[in-house]
Image (cartoon, rainbow, N blue to C red; front, side, top):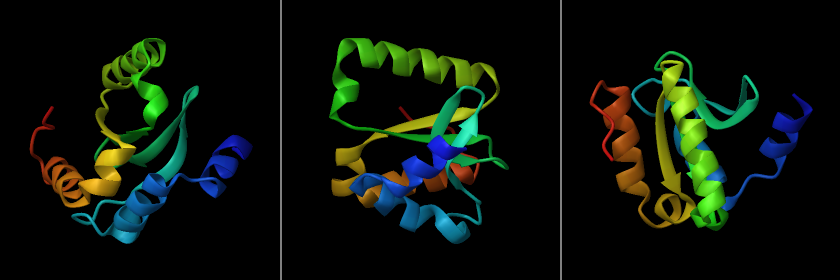
Length: 114
């Protein structure tokens, strides 16, 4: 819990922006939590009702080793019945409307797009 609290207090610009858009049920009435503990992982954003995880990836996630860890993490979460959406920080900051639209579509019951 301490790690979750520390991560909430040191959000990236992209995390802070997306949190302002997700909080208070602003997207299709879905309640999101940020920096939520799930097993051994801390999820950037999590909607329990939708079993939806949103992960934001900074530049370090393009490195092969980190990309492999991210893929394993996504596979683990999906095997537990969760839907995982991944966005880069750049997408959140520069293509905000498209990111929100994609999240909205998934929350409203549409299939997650690649």
